[in-house]
Length: 407
Ligand SMILES: Cc1ncc(COP(=O)(O)O)c(C=O)c1O
Ligand code: FES
Image 1: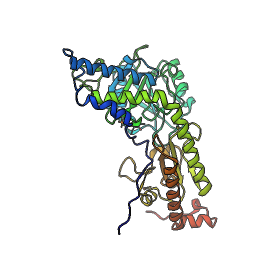
Image 2: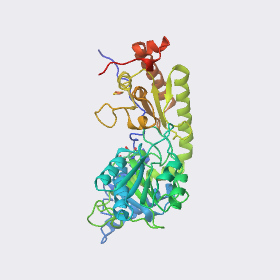
Image 3: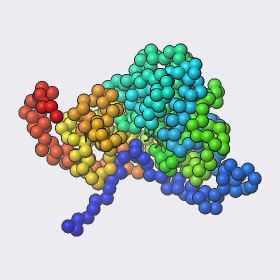
């Protein structure tokens, strides 16, 4: 058949973002004529690259209210999170071997915590309420004299909920424990100020904020000073905290992307919030039995994580192939397990299997959303028509009362 392929619609901005063309333009000269090694001290090629790196450092620092000297460049948030957790625990851990984190953190935080546990450190994993937020009283109760670090993400990558960073920072400062936050999904989406929020370490990733992939940063507070043990050693770059030649073009792009956010973030988020609310309303008007996962208020502009009851998420995705969204299951492995984040919210397994994460961002248009809403709705209606569970629910049978055979 000579069918015209529909243009794919990208609604997966939490997975990654396209690099802003302005960012690409800023980067290009640093691949070619301005290619010097920023650590070369003896000639102008090096100085030129170093100057560009320092400008970028300042631009990154500015969006989070830090000073440039507190920004350590890394390869991304995965590395930053590893450095924060392992670096701090290994420095302070003899006297204070206890780390507190949250069950809904990104895998790279949870995996770093597991590694530390295997090495004998103690880890408390806080649960979350059914809106995805931590309970501050639980956090307070978990802190002991042995706690060195609390690590709570700013914004969750799956459900977009915003943790109460300022309150967490205040608790940590009062109890004299360091506060690390994974803000890979938060920078550019919410106002962040490391001073006001008493944040001691913050992980950032460029490719989530319209910058290039393969670069990120860890903010490490200087006053009061936070010490970390380097996880990558060598030439002693980044004040000994992270060795390796800095990738000048990537950093220039990262800096430019942050600079754009400094100027345009408020306006951009207002526009995206409007699109998101519009989308949710249209779904709610059209389809019964849909549920928004995660708090409706404490939520970033571009995230809609919705369960479409009685429809299996993967089947739904297969039906809407030209729309790039993420499903709430099997996304982290081939295990076909429903998302651990949704499970932690208490979303039951059936419903967790029916979720889609719809990510709206800088280049999303209303027309694209209209098309996506229509395709998803048609697919949900079609799949529900085929679902015996949906049929039973329409007849008023309580699905929960059914005894399922072992499988
Ligand atoms: C919350 C969160 N933390 C960490 C990461 C990892 O970031 P990177 O891809 O820069 O390593 C991601 C991206 O998947 C994320 O969403
Ligand atoms: S949605 Fe595919 S395994 Fe549950």
